[in-house]
Every structure is written in structure tokens, then in C-alpha cells.
Length: 123
Image 1 (tube, rainbow, N blue to C red):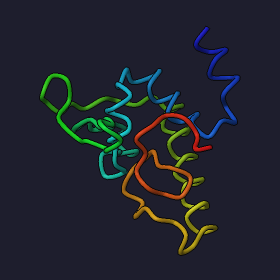
Image 2: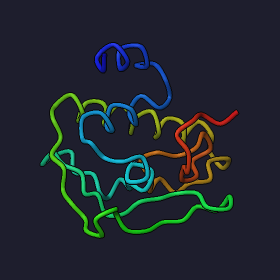
Image 3: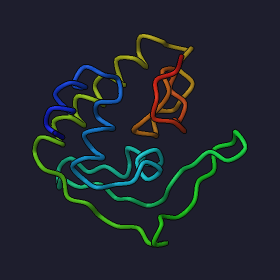
């Protein structure tokens, strides 16, 4: 079932998010808080250091559910997915130029580069 879902969503803008959630067990808020500095594709691993949520329409960042950070190992297919995601994000940043609002810190952003607080594409 998971394999079918991922195959169906492979061209979706949130595919990397879905893949990472499925293969690492990271929570939604942990992935929304994930920064590229937390990703080490050479080791390969990610550092889960916090979480993000939306309360009263404001993004709020905090600690993980356990209150501790953790390291999660990545398999080769997840490394490929993250490399492709980063390449697409870099292309989008170049294409949008000054319209890109994010600094490139977050792994999952909105279509204009700001840190994402949702897992649905913007309308």
C-alpha cells in the first residue's frame, strides 16, 4: 500500500515530504522544522532537532515530543529523493529570483521559499 501511494505521488510537489515521513518515521512537525543543515547526505542521516506547528495562524517552533533531538539514518533511495528535492528547490529559487522569500534554510518550504507550516500545496 505504501509503495503504491509513493508511486502515485512521485510527481507531486510534496513527494519528498511523503517519502521522508514514510522511510524515517519522522512526525509532520519534525519534517516541517527540518533545515538543510540538519541533513547530512554523506553520512547519510538527518538530525531531528525540533518541531513546528501552527497555533492561531502563527508558526510555532518547539522541541520534539520527547524533548530530545535524535539522529535518523537514511537509506540510498531516500538520499536520492532528498538530492532531487534540493535540486528542484534550487532551480525554483533561481527561477523566482528576488520573488523567492526564503533563505534556503528549510527543507520543506512554500512555493515562494518561505518555511512551510503545512503539508498541502498552496492554492
